[in-house]
Image (cartoon, rainbow, N blue to C red; front, side):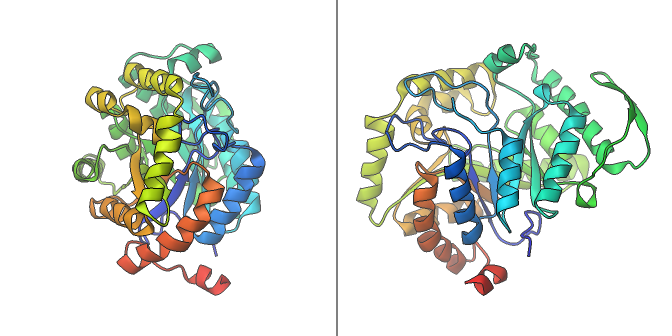
Length: 374
């Protein structure tokens, strides 16, 4: 039976960035995540069997320099999703799409096709309005410097897709950014839609997500600050658009039998062997072209960028990691993504030790279909 990301059952857990070399760990160690298709397929099957709710990729075209060229090897999110949906049974799989580089009608057809490959109900769309100036240069596209302009473009882009999925007639679209004639779009996703996620950290991003998304994906410095962020995003969606949205955040985990083992591994990969050139290049880009991190966060987060791209660190024993995830849940979040240095190597231990603890805490609900499969 398909697990729906929108069923409202318990705290959702996903895996973020496994299609990218290094994942979220900006490290030089030889055993860093390869992001090969073979490793991704192995990971997807492990996650599917364990009951992980979703996979979320990153779309990238050029790397972040340094000695490893972090994120220089990236599997295309649509093709990647097709292979994973065809090879799994339960897990939801998002495709991350940059509005500036992908025509909305091509995306409408691709996502509807993914929905069929996954049996209906498991494909999702992560909309990115754009932030990475060097990638715009690679694509030969001008990046609007104003967030308002980027999100105005993204709104019309999404309006075209939504119309393509909801309308059965042949229609035209005359807008500010797209002038399209005699549009017809088949197939359509089951029910005329797929779950939509958007990373909303800037004012304009949060407004876009409140208006359009099922989930707002936002980075937080800590759970105390995050509680206010989650509450504000939900209230904004209700007050301005009469909508209920889920709020997700992102973290990275190192889970070991003892806290000392976890801390030693963090020192090994994120301090002694961090790719500081890539860290500094990435942080510079974030500070110049994105609003996901405030200047204050960027100034104090260099080590967190090395260990997990600035996401929430969760290091320690299974109890420590379960407690950290519970704090995110209690802060009002509806779910979160996790990343590991070696996703496929570390996920089985996490699934064996942490997921039962989360069920015992009432954070996660037992999955009847998984219990039957076991």
